[in-house]
Length: 368
Image (cartoon, helix red, strand yellow):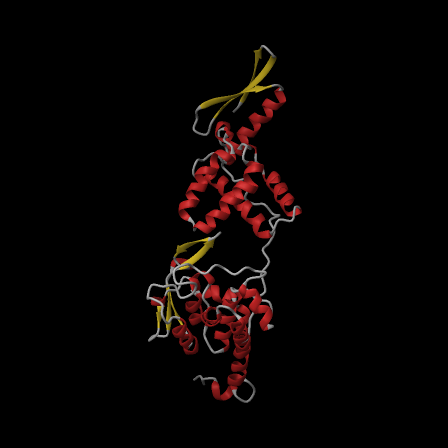
């Protein structure tokens, strides 16, 4: 058990607590001005030892800013450049000013929740609040899992993180896609997005050699993610190349569009430089949307439109998942559950036609 002992200093009487760490080694904590403070520390130590949450006080003296560089270095090599930029920015702008000089042992759950509440009060977006919290929690995770400086992460278990709202999917009809393409500066790109379901980075990374005219397929092997004015080339999402079917009328326009380009040239843009993402307010895509009169839509919404048109044409969920590059058909069902509502109606209708009144006797097998 921990013991409390007085000792004299030039400033007067002080108290120290002698106790044994979980490994059996004896240690002490000095400097308590009041005996009751020493006794409370001693009681806390014994409780933490019994709960298995004891950590030597010296290990908790390190600050968040001292832990952050190692965590950021690990992220720099383990996530995409675009993702790393957002994490580093969140650390520099939001996490470091508030928590950089705070010792990890001094952080508790109420303080973290108060910080989240302030961010929300300052009207930061849900995405920003969730991201900056994940940076702080990730850094403290490293103190728990790697350096063992904490037994429990005080940033985990908060209950006031804002929930991300699910954005309503926008689906265009085939007629609307044609209207939009007719008004667009990059007509063929709009058709590829709307009828092949590629992500923007996958579409602008297409090279002429990726168009398989005889098989009527697109080989999607790269994804160009825009970083400011530059682009980061990487594998498609889920790190899996895929073969995407192309409707013949889109393939015909691709053939005309690619005339005069070399096999290694980019399909869109000037052949060597990636096409930048259009500006949301006054870019060529927004202008085409206004002129065409279709409902407000983004380039990524054309991917949703492709899913809708594919389902309407009879595509099953497995084929759609392969087309869109989802790692699992369950993801497709989760993202586009609304597109398969009619399938549920068809199930009920099929059961009625097979086993409804007057049909049951002829369809149910007879037993001996």
